[in-house]
Image (tube, rainbow, N blue to C red; front, side):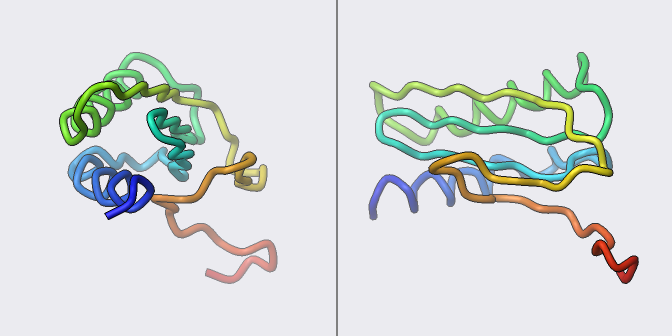
Length: 104
């Protein structure tokens, strides 16, 4: 498999039991040997969120042989703002949110 697919599959497993109600989405940028991830929270991330991000990072790192460089971070993304990808990112998780029209 290629690096991108390996990263996406790793995240699928690493996120088990790590998704909380305030997590809006997780975006990753897999560029071998670097894996970057943004965890978008609709509340200000703190100790619990930082711990979750760290745990997911540990699970992902365990799936790869050295050298691998990971850069995971929790960011504040208020619900009133659009979830957007940065250059080279793709979604590995998105929670269901009402559309701008107000429909579920």
